[in-house]
Length: 276
Image (tube, rainbow, N blue to C red; front, side):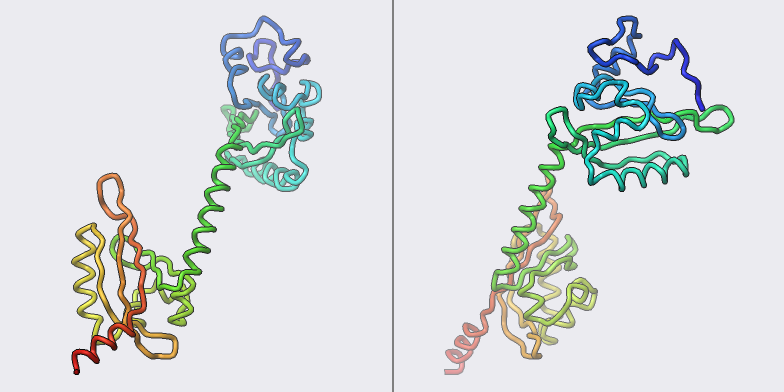
């Protein structure tokens, strides 16, 4: 186990922030000004130093936080997961990072990204661990809202009574809405498979549609075409399909969105008029 020296600029303070000593090195003063938590732990994982930002955030004193005392600020639901992760990395000696919730002095919990790396001596033995804990709560909240919006949009798309496909720039399907799956009787794995078009396109349309589509995909502009698509009962109906690209900053497609509208009745009416 590493020994603590008097001149170690990160030595444990018996006093909290209010009683911080004045003979700190410039580097220690800088570490204490960091907005994140900087810490050092012994080879067994017990903490022997945290910067003043940790005390300010948690309201704990240096005496309360040392060793494993800092766990008092950990969210109760996080303890089993965090301890298992700690034990795993203490055994392996590998660097690691994880997310956990820490209690603020006013009782509010916020998410932190915690990273730890081992410090080895000349024999390769771990003498201590150094780490940093960064507040990512705002980012987590934004991520959660983004996922909620995405889930809501997916639900809206699934309720649209049209065939909707999301495609890669080369035109391969990566997602289909629920209406598409119900209409064709296919699974998402079927839709994303290379054989998808042969499963749903009318045999007489495959070659024509593929030629038109591949040429249009290279233009990076919306286009439309009509083709027959097979229902789950084996019957084919005509669909008007419009393709719209999502472009990057250079104007290149990163996604294509295709929406198909059933126009079977219109096509039948046109055929009747033509026959008459």
